[in-house]
Length: 426
Image (cartoon, rainbow, N blue to C red):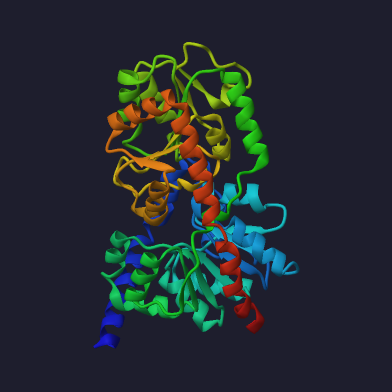
């Protein structure tokens, strides 16, 4: 029966891939209308490009968040294995741009081919990596199967699995179990993540903590944020960071209705392709706006109520420049974004009701006094306004945030220690 179920799951998965094949170029062209990076490097996505490097430490991080989370682990691996080349793969143009900015001086960076057996076999045969590290929850069945056939040991690092995601994987239970069984080491963020992964069939599961606690705020970005803040003057600043579709409009309305008249809202959408659309929402709310991209040429005006953060790679600077930070993706049922960065800079953090992607980190932050949860956009602006008036409360939350971030560091060294025995075998 288990063999029949696995055959059924594999057939269903491969059929879905087959049906999706004609849509792939259409999807890339469609997304390329707004994000030009989707129009480039198609040969890499089809495993037709020459091998970028062979015998490398290979890390796959699907997009921006995962690519940034990998930074302390990559640093630990390079320190332990300085002569090993580094190969990074991703799936999105923003992930690639992030990789270029963080690792471009030493790593080779390409797109991971789509999960068709012939493509991933060709990719692995050409690259011949010593080890593969899949960030967070990247379970690609064809890739995992091909890696096992070609004796490439795989590690699932910084692994997280919400209850919702676990239910999704459980729809193909035999295929999920077969994938997890072929991963040699699973480094889970929390006990809850580990329990869900074990339930789905993982073995050799270790709780190593969240790599994002090991990301130190870059000094140059903190300095940039301090310069911005000096230019903005004494105005209270609320940052809405990494906001997602469906969140900006209610935040803008609540801000227009009840925020202090001198407060500045710095609004930074999660995805750059939405910058123009969010600019239209700000105009529709009747709020005077300027853009971060134009701020060097035009100083912030007194009548400006909203600063649109239309820049990439500056999130730590935004955190350093604000008084209170709301971390987006959490008002809408999207699971939330990373609140650890804001806490590590020492800023009070507000989150919405939906934080299942960062369940453990959010719970710990709230318990430590570094963060508060709000129910909706109106509550967000009311709570932010209270904090903007209460400097001692902001200091207490900021100090709690720094302590919270520092107390959970160390995951990178623990994961690197799990990778080391696999490298000795290669």
